[in-house]
Image 1: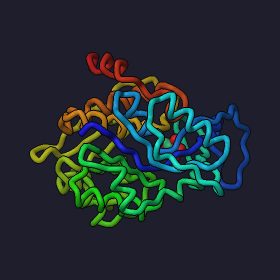
Image 2: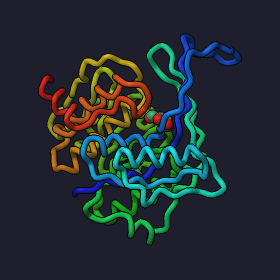
Image 3: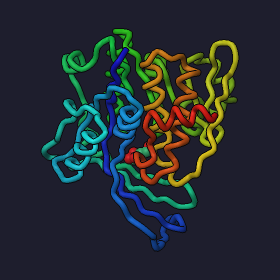
Image 4: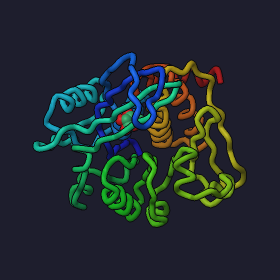
Length: 294
Ligand code: RIB
């Protein structure tokens, strides 16, 4: 394997910082407003490319200024855009983010991301056995299911980041190679079972991210816990995306799941030290230096 193909969302993040998160029916005064490139798919593509992956982004933008800025951003980060389509009658997806009390709340408007759909012939031109596919859930679920089935039939590995949370069929979970929910998504997917029991059902496949506590997975013999690094938190947006992009890079390089998770935990921990989903994403040299200190 040498290629990562991200099939997913591409958005512009509209980020407001405020001292107080508004309650329902409440208006509060904000501090700052910025627009920065985001979208879970795009974030994972940029994270993987900064860490040295050969990355192709497959998705859709609208025919507007946000779409142009996003294309430019991919170019600067050396993410391939041959399969990034512009949808004439649509606007680019947006994510409306409130940053308060050291955490975020996000409303995503899919817009052009709703148009990420393929025929099997198109998938054939896109994917081969040298590819790892990275998927999330901000595009139509039918596309996620179609791509997973296509890849399963051809032994093409798929890393599914089941975010934002939604119910998934057990068939889909069986077809993908890796699933990376956070704790909340894990509970939504598998109910209130103890996490150890859920992990044991999916050896070397289910990797649960637990924020400041790091990540865990079952290696077939024991449950592995990989602790997070100590970070100076500026903005946690995109930390999960950095984890997934980094995990993909390390797996494509032939590392085992434990090595890949250790690399990804460090990259993800470093990503929270900058503003914006992509603002703190580290490059490879930075991660290697930090790994030496862990
Ligand atoms: O995972 C973070 C991302 O989720 C943000 O960049 C925003 O676009 C939302 O989709």
